[in-house]
Image (tube, rainbow, N blue to C red; front, side, top):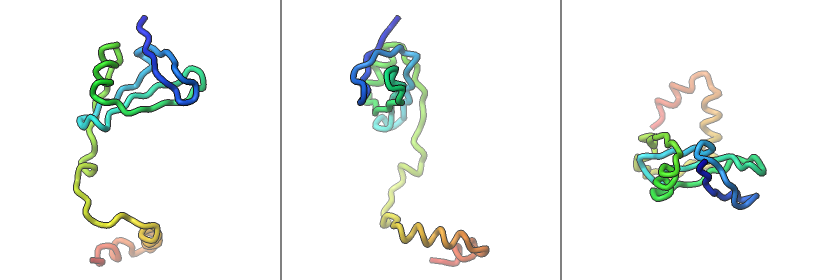
Length: 107
């Protein structure tokens, strides 16, 4: 049976079978990842999977699932980041019964 050596940050090197891995391959390779549960501490370990890692895991028998980043992640965002005050203002606005009117009338 094929054994794959992986590293747990707590326990160090561990051996797992291909069936023990979750491999999520994204159309945007930097977002691909693999995950496994450490047999020692039972912690779920998730790590980024560069193209070469994806190829190696598939070659060893790990079955990949494929996914795409949501379109919103690829949009350009040029406004300022939200602040805690922005979040609080939105929370207070949503508590009002007329929140939708208030929101659509703001510019």
